[in-house]
Amino acid sequence: VVSESGSLQLEAVIQLEAEPFNAEPPRATLISSYVTPVDFFYKRNHGPVPVVDNIESYRLSICGLVEKPMELSLADVNYRSMKQEATKIQCDVNLATKQCAGNRRTAMSKTKAVKGVGWDVSAIGNAIWGGAKLVDVLELVGITKLSRTTSFGGKHVEFVSVDMRKEEHGGPYKASIPLIHATNSEADVLLAYEMNGKPLNSDHGYPLRVIVPGVIGARSVKWGFFMQRDYKMFPPWVIWENIDWSTRRPQMDFPVQSVICSLEDVNTAQPGKITVQGYAVSGGGRGIERVDVSFDSGKTWVEASRYQKSGIPYGSDDDAESDKWAWVLFEVAGDVSQNTEIVAKAVDSAANVQPENVAVIWNLRGILNTSWHRVQLHIKP
Ligand code: MTE
Ligand code: MO
Image (cartoon, rainbow, N blue to C red; front, side):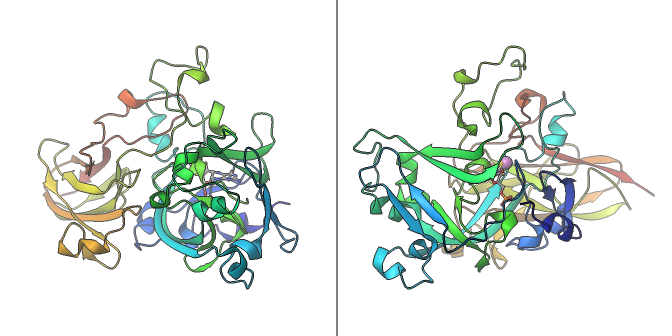
């Protein structure tokens, strides 16, 4: 069943493809709130959006190399139900930025054509996810916390959805994460049923989806294969003619990223002060250490101020407020008197920096474009 939501969402988002439904908000809209409203949250689908309406008969089946395979109803995993007392599964709430690996792909394709949905800079969003912790659900089937393997030798948790992909040979959408990641309580992997305090809508995975914080969006399976033949980071010399998928591991964490959202790719302005705002985020729970902005095409830099949540400065003594899975928004003002390029680059808590040019990280799938973000400014006297 194809959802109607594609046509309903058009005012808030720019639709890139109708079928499958792929859409992102305008960049200025994206940073208009710290927590991204559901309507402004990008939507990425590999096939038609399935409508799951047989809620009573919906089962989450946990099977494979486990001692006690189980089938759970939604009531078993949802803390709002009575049954939850029986399974003892608590509700966990996490603020987490989810980013598609293909964010900023259009800019990468200017170096050389790549395959994939042509995203601008808004295939990213920051939401409050509510759901059951995957570690708790796995404990029910006899897998203990911080396990590398199950007693039957299983090393990965694979999430298999109900939607059918259009590309390749079809079949359900799937993705997996290592068992050690899934059973690490600190990794905060969720079987989410709420987004920003409300039940998930169909576009975002109703009734249940995975949220893997700090990791590319592809692993956060909705409605609930790509581990072998997609979402891998290849070097620039690999092309479709010589690709060997087995040589690279599946991409998990996304690298440090920052984007200017208050300006389009090309802008005109009066000479004088200009304020630059945007987002910065890193994967794997690494925080943002610094965001540098240049008003003179990268010759000199100034540090932007950063904040999380309700304007509390990030990195200040109130740091207890900062959330490791969530983005920071940044802002800085500078003077411009002639045509220039404004550039942003971020540094994460492990001192990783964004690469200067997109060409050096070009890859045929057009993923992980985290090059310095540049926008043009034409000054009109
Ligand atoms: N899950 C299913 N079942 N089907 C999909 O097509 N797309 C993945 C992931 N989970 C996908 C999926 C990709 S590539 C991304 S970036 C995110 O979901 C997008 O989630 P969103 O549409 O809620 O923003
Ligand atoms: Mo994605």
